[in-house]
Image (tube, rainbow, N blue to C red; front, side, top):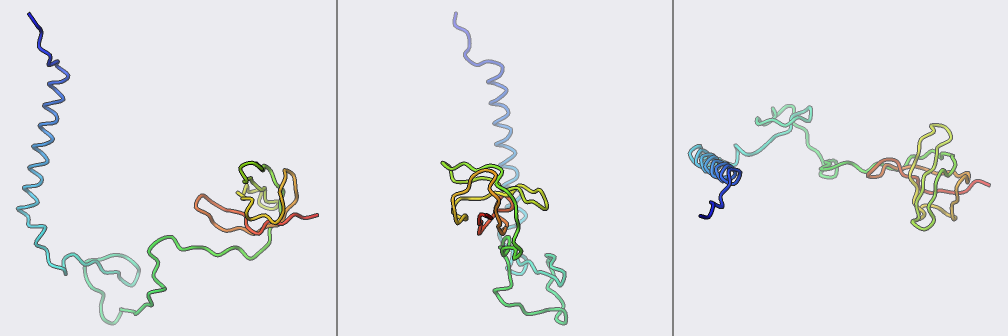
Length: 148
């Protein structure tokens, strides 16, 4: 006599899936009953108050200020390069991959450098002057020049 191919684990998984489907259907029906889709435009608008916080109420007319479109940032603002020259030495540089790290002589900070930002080919222990800018993963050295 052949055994049933449904094991206890399979039955439990099927019960769990069925329960999840039922819960999802119940949630969908609740949303339909609440009438979320019928909201007016005024209910969906978010306002920014004078402190920069989001609110559902429009600001008072006396506290409203006009802004230029260029002043609004929708993401992380790009920072300009620091204007002061820094000095340091090349701690590591991989010539085949074209990148390395510089140790700043003042802050002892490790800063990423790419060969496209260097005026000459860099080698380990070279003394360099550079500027920095904020990259996606931290500080990046730019305008790197060897000090002789």
